Length: 271
Image (cartoon, rainbow, N blue to C red; front, side, top):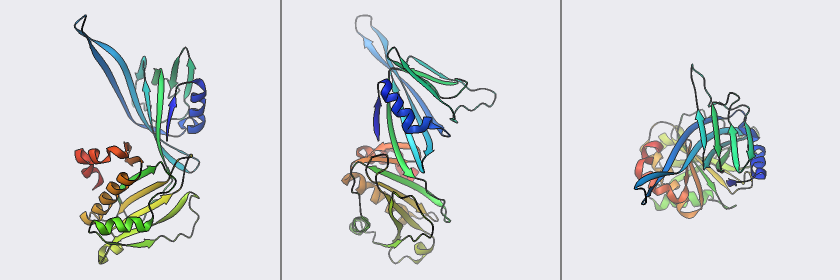
């Protein structure tokens, strides 16, 4: 999901959609300053400040990871002392006037931002219950179309990559989130150990918040290069065939930039 916050109506939508980020927490804050060279004066002059915040929160059975990019920042305060923590969000205040937005992200005003515009980029997933087997890595893809990969499509991609796998569908006794379409385990063929302890668990879900399909891939079990390779191959093929965003940890990556991100430092984060 992507949404531009430029008017008072947009701000009302943001507060309604996020529930004011209640019970969420800020995982990352970044500030960047842009400067341009002025030929007449021979000096660099300020050309704008941008603040990016990553917020993780839960609402209506969903976990959302939001990246809020605020541009045209004219006032920014981040102040903590004596063990205070302004990353936990409970009650936020926001207002719009004179062409500027003002955000108080905590009652004490220790995290305060004034900006001209804000842009929301968000990935939503159903709340995933803990798995009895240790989870080593998780990769999420939020597609822009209604129809996503099928189980057979995943198996075909792995066959072509020389990593044939079998599929074991998950059977649940309790109810799950209604958006979940199917889930199960990808197990390397002829690998008895993987069948018991190492696997890639896949969960597919339908549109959330009016967006397209979603897919969660989780590496379960002991450290195993073959199983990690399954996730890497599927992530590469999914981003090549479908438009959308990837989520690794608290980092949102446009699908078209996935290969560049992996080439730089992504492999160590997935394996």
